[in-house]
Length: 118
Length: 107
Image (tube, rainbow over all chains, first blue to last red):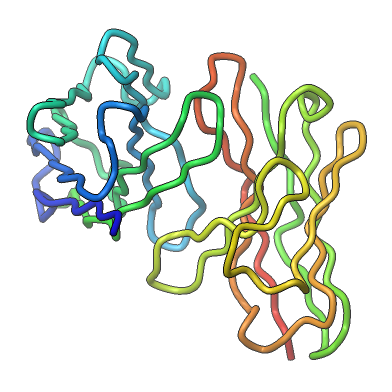
């Protein structure tokens, strides 16, 4: 069955860095665009970043541009999010999700919590 | 920038019909999707392409879209339908876009 498993979350100080990973199985990973979606405590869902099937096209929400870097390794069926210069407002559960371009998010992981606090 | 607007909350009694709206200027050109999220869980797709229901979703869930407004209807809402519901579409670059979410209370 389809599985997306995020890892790499935890507690980090403001200004620190973390790298999230998302391991995919049960579907043809290289056929799907992938996104990171986050949800701050008690808040709604927010799209963070997307990467095309080949990795050649990448988008970010304005609030993370220049600080976060999305990447993928189709040979390893894995998605990554390098997060630098973290801020308190980046505190959230981060989900990875897979979708066909311009369509619904078909597959979701269970999320990993990032807490940015001193 | 393009936005999707939902009411923050909707409340109904069990067995009543709940309607959650989503407005967005691009909805005449873009499909609307609906996700249900229960506390502590990942979102689950309940309606895709305006009005299609994925397999396994109860028939009481339906969707419609007209002009700039999409609507999720839960006919005969049940206590287990209590959750947050998010309208979803895509922006001009094809990236995911969420509405602010609607908390449905069934009591």
